[in-house]
Each structure stands twice: as C-alpha cells, then as structure tokens.
Length: 158
Image (cartoon, rainbow, N blue to C red):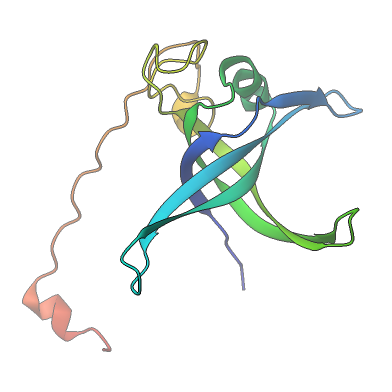
C-alpha cells in the first residue's frame, strides 16, 4: 500500500535562503519558515503565541528562483512533502526537526512589503509556475464541488 505525506504552511522566512550545488551540479536551496499560532489560555484568558519552525529544502530550477527572489522576513506559502527528523545536538539535547521538501513556494508579499522580494502571488516553483519569468501568478478559487443528492447520502456507510 502506498503512503503519502503532504504539508502546506504559511509563514515568514527566518533567514535568507542559502543555495548550494550538489557534486553533480544540481541546485538546492534551504531556508527556515516560522509559523505563528495564537491560542487563548483558558485559565488566564490571555493570548499565548507559539512558533513552529520548519526547515524547507527546494531543488532544481525552483531552488535558484527561490534563492534569488526571497529574503528574510518574506511571507510565503510552501507546499511539499513533510517529515520529522530526530537528532542529538552538540549540547547533548535531543531535538526534533520539522522538514519540508518543497514542491512549490509562493511569495505572499505585496510589492514594497519587503524590499527586494518578488510580487505578491509570484510562484517560485511547482506546476503552476511552468515558464516562470517574473510574471505574477494569481491564485484562482477552485470551482465548488457538486453537492451530493439525498440518494447518494443514503449509500454512505456511516
């Protein structure tokens, strides 16, 4: 049986992307994304902010575009394969790393929001960016799924 792991996150780059090349010349870019979440403490009524950090890896042409166009602070949408990795840090602490190998990276910043960033909605990779040359890719809302009839609902096993 096949397995599947997909993650979609929206957050801000915690550092500038770092691009390098593998020994066979394939480009790879890595950066970190901070995803913030606010929750209300039920006992105190105060809002508590929590941040999850994701390590993102981008390969190929997307890696080059990402390294050229994104900078620390840019707001991005990242979609890709998710995995966790456990390791022992140099200080002896056991750590867990949240990692995404990106299939697509989309800048969510508007022009001028972050200096040097691409236009809002610019796709830096993925199927929607075939032939990307700096053009703005506008996300489109998918057509609503057809509503099932009452007869279809009777066939459901729950």
